[in-house]
Image (cartoon, rainbow, N blue to C red; front, side):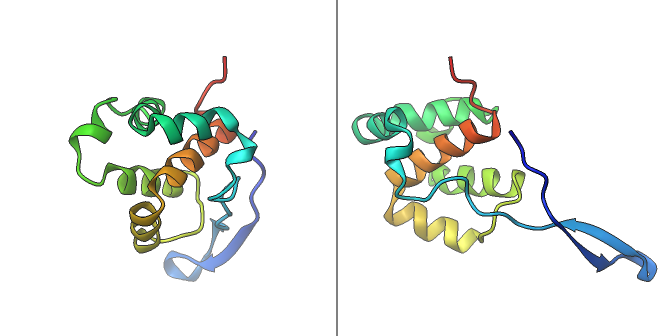
Length: 120
């Protein structure tokens, strides 16, 4: 499912060109719940359950969202960095603080898009 990403040539060590993958956008918009109703419903009515599922799909302990303060920020940043998505830690913090349930749904959709969330 991963698409070929354009690359940007930047000078590397000792002036030789280095290929750097271009950052991409999220596969779905933050308020794109209608793209995946199951994640939207789970995030709306049982957000903690969705966050625990997301943590498990990311290879983390399912208790991370319960035990780690602001885990949603860390999880969003990890997914963004892992998949070379545009953004910043400050953006992740602000978005997660004000639109937490929407962020959880977007994370679930992104993991499904990248194949980390195997749909049964």
